[in-house]
Length: 354
Image 1 (cartoon, helix red, strand yellow):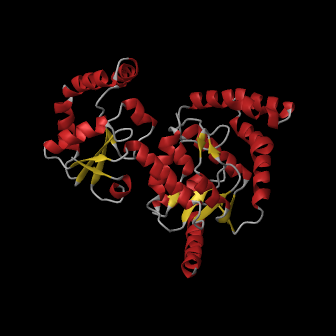
Image 2 (cartoon, helix red, strand yellow):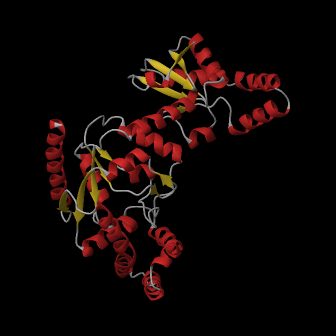
Image 3 (cartoon, rainbow, N blue to C red):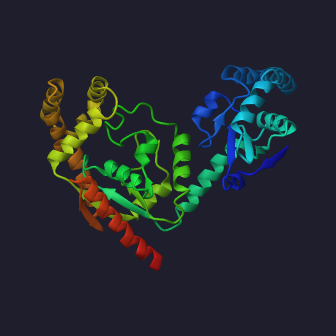
């Protein structure tokens, strides 16, 4: 059985990762694309951990061997099937211990191209965080979209992606729109480790190219944006996206009410989240806004929300950035995308000269 380092296997083609940790560990964070084939379930791992601490190390190993031995034939069948077409099967656990070593050894004995990942998932996490740190020191490759809530920044990013332009959709990766009501209709956010792994996995393919991104604060919902991305947003090429308020309201209603979740659940989520913005509004405006919501007058509800919360907040953000390198109108998404691609081409030529 051979071992392999994380930096080596991440730069290889035709490699598949097998995560032999528990389902719980896998869900909290794994290497993107890894397949979970646990050697122990959650309860078994907890039991063996207690045995290790409260009895002794040897007993824990013996009982672990007893549990795992019954599962090996099925694990072998799964890995053999999944590994077809791959030149290397990388087996990993938390830090390159007995779980991955035992499975990688058995798979090697069965003539599968199996390798144990040195240092396990912990080594991957360390590698990703070091890569993030390195990126804080390189010049910003970001074209940053700014604009009032509802102007269509996310629509533009998605349209640019369809045209195969380089896009880092941080809100998409965080499964949150980045505002007080940003979670409406979207379900749970991924764990922080999963979010960071997905950011790394997405950005590694960009290399030194310019990348479109939306201006973000340090947190999107409960997820912390990697500091290198925040630094690049601050020092990037800034594009202000303009749009009439009436169209902004219609787009917000379409996004929050028609494109995600059920209308009933979304309205309930919004109603439960209103208290979080109460300190930023007068009592009169807040009560009026609640009346609009209760009466299902959603157009006026969103209009008042923009006037008294989102737009004043964004004016402060706009003042912080000062002047913008470019301004576009997003009334027509296709036209706006074409303008952004022109900006990309201009800036790409400038980058090439440097």
